[in-house]
Length: 307
Image (cartoon, rainbow, N blue to C red; front, side):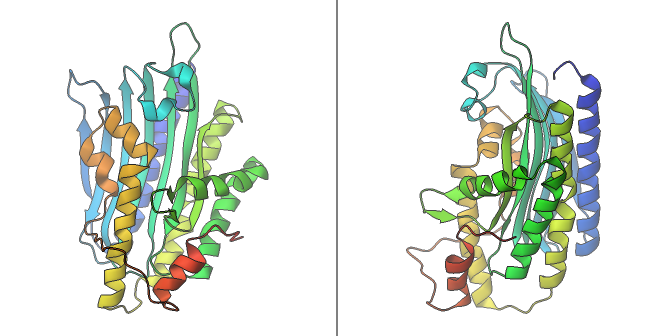
């Protein structure tokens, strides 16, 4: 990776520390421990490398919370990674990152996703190319304006030291990326998203990516604290499961990270840790006009300037 093995190792150390910090604090909130599953790709497989998957299931606060670290190498970049870099088609690559999705039990607590990653590739006869990507986004089932404002404010503050333009660019990028084109519907209220990023130079681009990862707990845990004890019934639970179905659709149909992992021969159990434990679908289901469920569609699943 740009002939800087020290920086690669520093990013790996950062990612493992980030994963442990997040899982430790979430476990303390839930009262349940994460299952820790260290893995290594066996010799002879197309993709080589190792990782650490941590997952909490059937907890008091989180019905399923998965947070995975992976560091892999492969003989050629999959198509999902070269659509914006066609000159690297077929190039050997190295990738590492932390990715998480937390599915809460209470429908008033939003689902959250965060990912930070580094990818490098070397085309024949060319110098190595390295770039970063990541971000975080919030998917509420019942919308609260103060939660949306808080989440976006933390995202903006994390990016501020790296230029006033970053949040202004990465916020609409997130809105555009986490969009179910086949439904013509947003997945949630967004956040920030960036990919193929190296414009600040390797060291500063890495620092920006780390700032995003390190802001995650401040962005999400205050929302969990506000909502986790709210009373709910069968109606709210049924709507949560219905909206989770949309989450599944996006991750399997549109998400580049899922496609990258599966196309490159990654570890399926770790790639699909983002799936909720339960979800449902209903034919042409429409929320009752004027209801809280209708508010989600009309007021929150539309691009807005939250801060």
